[in-house]
Image (cartoon, rainbow over all chains, first blue to last red; front, side, top):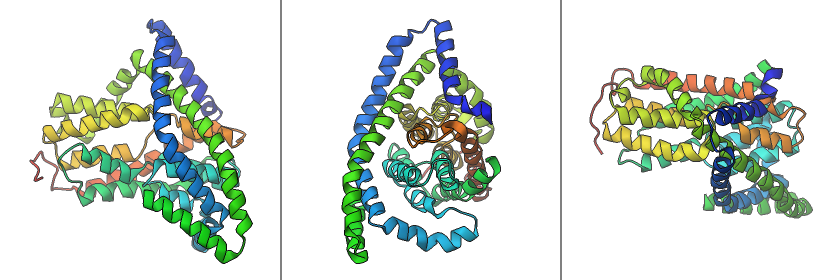
Length: 171
Length: 195
């Protein structure tokens, strides 16, 4: 497990070493790629600001807590942290919304707590499913049939259900 | 999405009026500005940095290597796609980009792959499977999550890599089982589409 702590720096080192070995112009390629990332961030920022504000309003009004408390009796019996429910609800629909809710969970609970870890696993192992299906099919003249949604949502629901078990298994 | 945001804002105000604890909402609202400044800075640097590194990885041939590594697995999962070189290439590139967490590159590659799948008249099952691979988010290094955990003051922000990978694989397996059940028999062979 200790080994995975090194994942990010090790990946950077390996990539840069291979690039240097293959005579890639690291500085100019890095800058060009980084600019693309910065541009993508620019495009994300307005939406992110709006959603972060809405989510933090929802949180500080107490409505988000009420939602968590509503689902708590059932979920705690299943051994599930209710704090992650808002994340599970918004994750399939909106990437920026999920980011905002996830960040909120991390600041409200401790990132190394059970709820923080379950939220982390959920955030990392699921995608904006509905959005992805809509965008991908819009590139074609095909219609997304029910079976596409059912199989993708099965994976999402499984990801939600498994996340608490995964956290128990690993920590 | 616009309506959803509006609904959230209205619900918040009504809810805090109902509970009578109005000051918490206005405090939270002002705090959200500093919150989003922190979040934005973390995200900006993380996205910029990893995008730069991934471009270097692409130029060093690492994306192509990952692409070659995933091909045999994909060939097994969607044999009809691999009768068509263009479709097979586009699908493998997209999966490789997703594995490396290259979100910016993965989407255009995915759209190109969808068009190739359509043009090659690949089976509905293979298209559903390609979508499933994209929505189940298998990623070798969840850089954004690690960055956000670091910002939130985690003692070991990167210890989530293995659990996330495990959970993605488990979720994908569940999705695959459902997909194989749904497409048993019908829709497996290459067939034309009704638009």
